[in-house]
Length: 260
Image 1 (cartoon, rainbow, N blue to C red):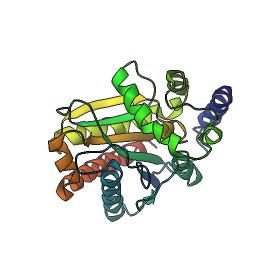
Image 2: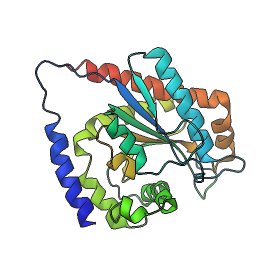
Image 3: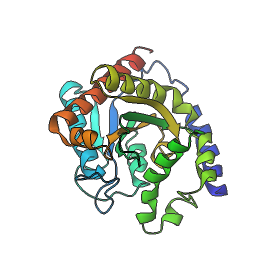
């Protein structure tokens, strides 16, 4: 835990320095990493007839194609484009290596109450809400499927509340832009697609903490809700979701580039 904290504080100082403008170079959103949650031996949450890994991948691929078609100046990079297992620590590592301008992670939700439905968009932070913590712990728990996870995550324990609280020290440099896109996403889901928006939330997800750029994690809906599971598996429903994410990303790109 001490190793993670020391690493975090050093990294924060480096990232803050990186925001100092150099000359007259204008900022452009040129690369986006799209992360389809889970995959391979990790199915994610399970519905009555579908798996999170498959729904997340379908939406991610549709989103990527839409960006390529409509924003040709933006390079799209996937953490996975097939049904394969990608270690959690590798996902932000890909984005960092590519010097991406934004990281979008796509997931599906679950609840013991089958009537619960709607979208949620998370940014890095810490919340007092027990329900938010449970979502973060579930998504982070994939770590336990990996070999040598204690070495790869420097002592990070998915079930430890202390670990999640410690992560709130990180990502401060990117929170503003992360929130900007997150709020636009939920607005698109609610007002353009007609989904039930459960709002923008914050919690300690590994993939958000470890990215050195603005980032969001989208819970596109609840596979535990029979009606919503059908929607999430419908090709038109997936297209609507991907289109909503695209419009929010497009508007974010226009807004931040206009600030130069």
